[in-house]
Length: 417
Image (cartoon, rainbow, N blue to C red; front, side):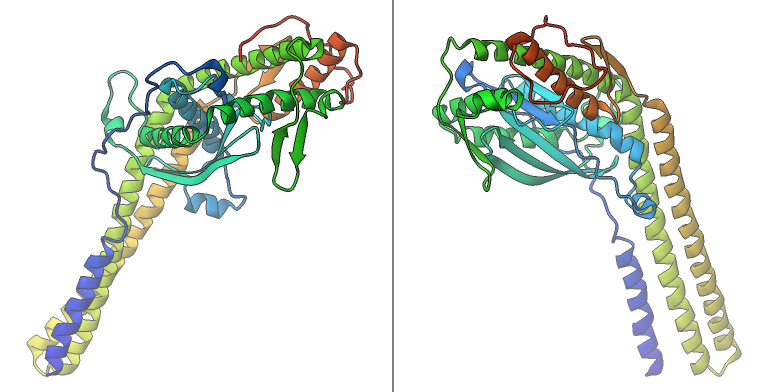
């Protein structure tokens, strides 16, 4: 009877080990490739909304152990914050559903539609983003979490420029944005455009445009009270200044595009190797757990058999089971050290990628912008110069304090909305 209990007990442990071996799994089958909904006809100018895609929130934990556990390499994340934003921008622009689509280095309230995203997880295996979309009037379109497992066909494609393994995710965001925009009436779209223009103007000269907008500070919304006259000279000057602002953003986006193209090959390789390393690491974890549990089952079974058997053969079998189980447990711990080896390999891949991605510099209006780490401050500096430019062209006092040692901005420039 006691032996029957043992026979039931040991297989249960073995089954638990086998079940645990499947605890860490990833679906890697090819996925259907989604595509952004294309515009079927030309959208009227007064309903065409410009979009600003904010550099993604890197979301890098301060704790080093947490970063290692979540496979986060700070310098890789900094590059991803630009690269992923550019991929979403390209998807939106390629749909033909929007006006100008630009990646912006800082929050900009004076844009028709703004997209911001926090990177929740980004490896060669999976991408998770928390995305928020709102417009200049303060209306929040949606806040949603997106996730996708990598389409591994992209890692096997060595001809030309492979499709991004997470392109489906960008497509879903683009299609959700379009779905929401289609719920807005034509006058709502025109209002969004008017609010964005007036918010830009009031940011540079609040004393001149404060009576044009009503603000609900509690809700964070804006409403047009009245519009400037079509021939208002101050507004005409403001439009020219805004064109220069767009020209800067266009130059910044050329830089981001070059940055993305430059890092594309090394980043794709990093993702591919990261995917393989995670798979190998998970396989090692499954194997280690299986061996430990099966070894423990053999040890327990051998001890119980030894207490029940009075024969030499039975005792020898029990001893062999104990030693065999101990060896299995040891091999399980050896597999555990293999897990650490794969983790270290991932870290080295990140450091290698960090060495390949270097900051780039762009000259704008005689000033230098370094688009890594300091791009945000430099774009804010550019906005301060716009205030000075407004003062120079209108003769009206600028609200922002003049930065000591800053040269006057040039009065020539151009750009398109």
